[in-house]
Image (cartoon, rainbow over all chains, first blue to last red):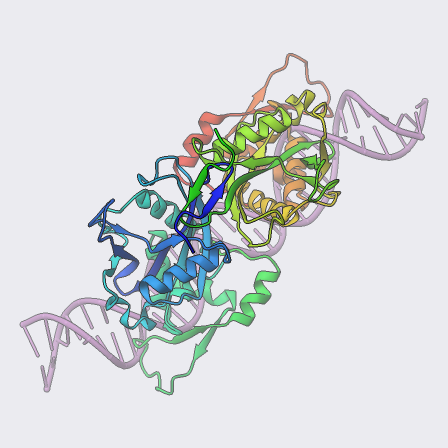
Length: 230
Length: 230
DNA sequence: CTAATTTTGCGTAAAAATTACACATATAAT
DNA sequence: ATTATATGTGTAATTTTTACGCAAAATTAG
């Protein structure tokens, strides 16, 4: 196909997607960024993303770019806003449909091998390219609201986790502290956690009980309309 | 400027905005639609919207199209999602950034004069063009969630309103019924309502107290983080 | 190796929020 | 004129949330 072969009656902005990738481990919440090797914003970090193809919708594009640029396949990808400031990209008019992805860092193997991809804790983000700092703020806000309606936490934790881990997750995302006993009883009362018997005999109380997320119960709950109050 | 004078190396989708306009009166919640005079979807109804110009961002575009096509200027316009299905427009690849607008029907004068614009109650929507039925469902969901965090109701009611009106509004949007005494006390406890003295002496209790929204109190509340629980 | 500290599970009492509900009065309807 | 309806007000019962103490084993410190 020739260069410059697409002609339109009126000018059109470029359409891209960007993807804010959230991960979680004992260090807290973090995002995966890619270092830009070229101008503009050379040396700055940015979310993976790129131009939307004519045969894919926005979420498909976000997932494709995510995999191409980081090697990750995310289960959970969701659109949270579209950014269209006239001057957001110095190269030309660009509209980006922003998504966030939730990945289990415990299952991410060679993501750090990937050329210039690195995890940054949410409290220590380097200078970002374009309007990505604004996009990150909006992404965090969206995630914080989402966690009240959907158990997004389970997309971020390992398959099997403990109550303290789950509490850490909620505290990291919402930036608050909970009483551990109240947190546990509220969570258990929801009825979406399965106790996992990993064979080890629980003698003392210091080795925590292992849980896994029960998607079936969750779906039933969701059908009735559900809200996680914190 | 010549026809067909914009040429790009890769194909680009069109970018449009659409605007779901919500209004409220004693009949309940309704939306303002425009009848399509031409194919495709001739005779169907659609949200006002159109192509984004190169010198305006999405919200500016939505407001412009809204005014051009209905004569309305809306105070409150907010983006709630971008729709990018590959086949959503039979004429070609189009991505639309969808917004909703809240208007005071009480202050809308000649909007119905406008050629083919008409209000439809939310329970009686005619066949819609393109994927606008889906867009409407998402808009309603967004509005229902928003009402928990922001006093969107006050954008829909007249400047001065009564408690029963406010309750009707909440009940219409959330599709539930509240105990009128509990609703009133909860609302008043928020401290964002001013009692309006309209001079008339309130003898009986059947003529309801008039209120207005107090934006200052609301801003203070919002700063502390706020949620309206229903 | 021993002692001190920390982590975890469990359960209860106090406080706060939500819910359910009754009556009086003037307007509106019959 | 009589009846029905809409509105304001307050309180008791219930439910939910919050605060907090204790015991046991693992971990850490010495």
